[in-house]
Image (cartoon, rainbow, N blue to C red; front, side, top):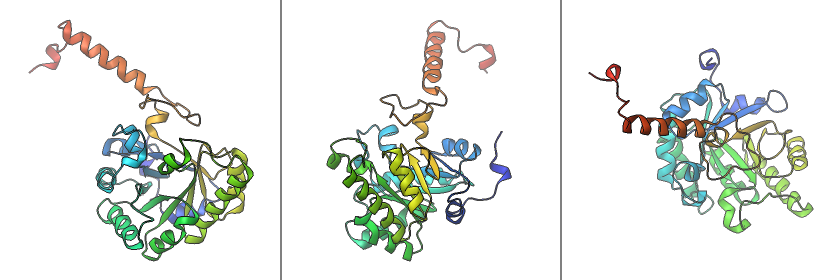
Length: 270
């Protein structure tokens, strides 16, 4: 049963107030029908992630995603008019180059795309960018730990913060997001103990993805948790329904019925 009609609009203020109280839920959406489903399920945050580069556009990683891609898909999701907070990713090199480009690109996601907040990867190195966006009235969700846009620098999708020095850097990055004025923070691909520590030591809500159970909330890529993206499944993903296998079986049955002359029947004909 949809909860969308019985709840109030979720805002950045709502999410901020959840710290240490009610767990925050977030799923991705990249198109109108998925946004309707995700919002109907009652999630708090819909993320138009640059993960669309892999699960929708077929790229090997997220570094190929452009601003035009993000604006296009954010617009589609915003047309669903979700009660959930709509957050859109800033893609690789759309921020952190010059301050003016960062502001203009984030502004596109808000003005053209209909996003209500933006998410960007990094901590210490983008603290001033976050502050500049917040000063322009653009809410920012941070993202530290395993930051997928840094895949080439990391040498692959590797858990971050396993060594003491690395853990301290992730913590510094988390603090920097808070200092810049971010309203929340995604923690990805870090040990559970570090996820718990960061959640305890900073004042803004943490949303984990492969960061353990002690974060203030959790996010998953919808295509992963429904097994619709079948190239690989990260360790942190729980498959809640195997829609990928169900869809494959349905399509195979369609092909067989057409070849056998079973479909269409009279009830499907004019």
